[in-house]
Image 1 (cartoon, rainbow, N blue to C red):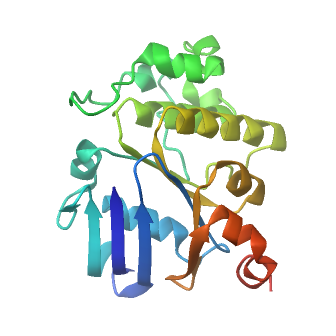
Image 2 (cartoon, rainbow, N blue to C red):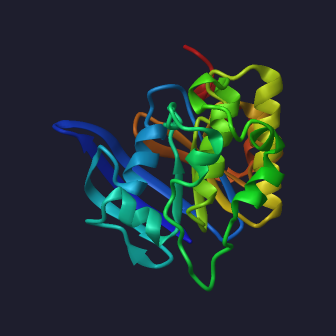
Image 3 (spheres, helix red, strand yellow):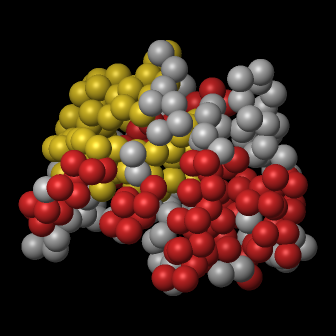
Length: 235
């Protein structure tokens, strides 16, 4: 479904990605892990073509190159993106936020409805007339995920979905990810919470200094504690 090879990218003249390798199969959940600042979020942005310039390598989605496409064009191809800063419309209600995305009709996509995302996130239904700006971080995260689902993605990118969330709320986000996985939604999750990796991931790609330095199944990842010690522990 998604295949990235030898990806290099830069913000202006500042090179930040130096050889990302990544692949996602249909229905698979892939976790990108690594310390803060190693290139996980930049990889997400490079996939959708937001605020970063790909300088070398290939990004292919369903066999077609994404080179030269702007972010909204990538999203229309079937790639949903939930950035770390969530970007809800603070002055709009939950329901109004959910009515913003342009509906995509495509014969091989699950066409998510507002009622379906309310079933997935019942808190959002309860708060549907509440302005997004007064909601908690966890509620805003769920709203951002729900809004992205309404673009009917075949692949969903979640950038640090637990950042800044209380443990109980973070657990609710994990439950939502597992529910999406049960629906067959393919996902790439930028993550540092190892509990999420253990519960959700099929494959793991470790990023360090803008490069993919290790990849394998989640079982292989947990079978080698040196990977965690070398690439996740604070030094």
